Image 1 (cartoon, rainbow, N blue to C red):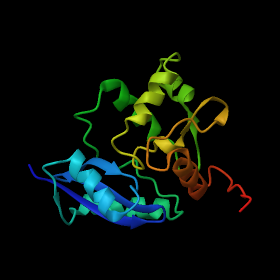
Image 2 (image 1 turned 180 degrees about the horizontal axis):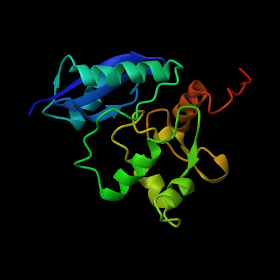
Image 3 (image 1 turned 45 degrees about the horizontal axis):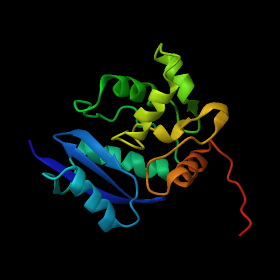
Image 4 (image 1 turned 60 degrees about the vertical axis):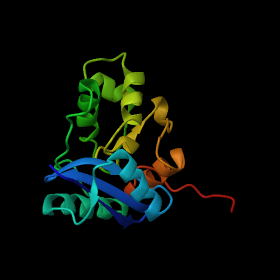
Length: 177
């Protein structure tokens, strides 16, 4: 089974996706440049070969580009390979995938939906280890009281907020500059 990857431009920078057969095995938010995103994917998937994605993966790429461009694109039907994902994380990701663009949940909300109300911190840790950012919209998961919480991607919480503004879940806040 060959693993492939590609990088592509979006409104927030160059993202990437890796696949095996017709199934996404990982995604990358922008790393600052196309070469950095490419290098990140090559480190994460050392056997991967850069190439043209198969049709279902190209549809996922097109959906990511549309979503980050402001379309209310739903990526919940993109096939993902959860084989290397711990059971709790997989379940948390499945709940996160039900959050529509423009909406948010808290870590506690997801914990309750999992039937484990005391597991908000574990949900936060799962989101921090999300191998499928954007497709599993961990950026739509906030801390208690609607606070940002963390975000492990380059740019941190600023990237998370930017994605939420694009989706209409947060108002664009004016700056002093």
